[in-house]
Amino acid sequence: MSPLKGLEAALKYIRKEVSEDMPIRHLEILLYIHRKGEVSVLHLVKDLEIPKSAVSLAVRRLSQFEERNKDGNLELKGLGLLDKERDLEVQTLVRIKLTPEGQRIVDGLQEIFRG
Image (cartoon, rainbow, N blue to C red; front, side, top):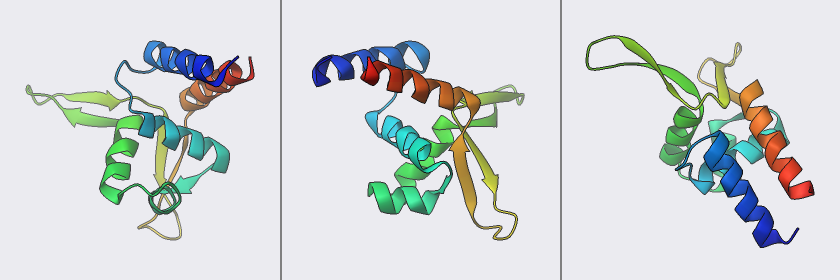
């Protein structure tokens, strides 16, 4: 498969399985976390050369979180592809890794580029 056809197939897959408007930057973050296993926001900022505010927003959108709607009820938001947890030793450090759903998406992308 040509690189252009592979990219086209990958974008079609992402739009179908995840979100119609998922930015390429978010895909880059998912693939980076897949390669590294577990990272911090600072790793993403430094290694991908993305501003911290952009990384924080991307991680929030790629994770799952609760938010109150206009009626005051909690709703789940986000894509549920990343999991965040505080480091037990360094409380200011948040570790980020793929959820099983995030891993499924990355596996699907890898299959597209292999095929």
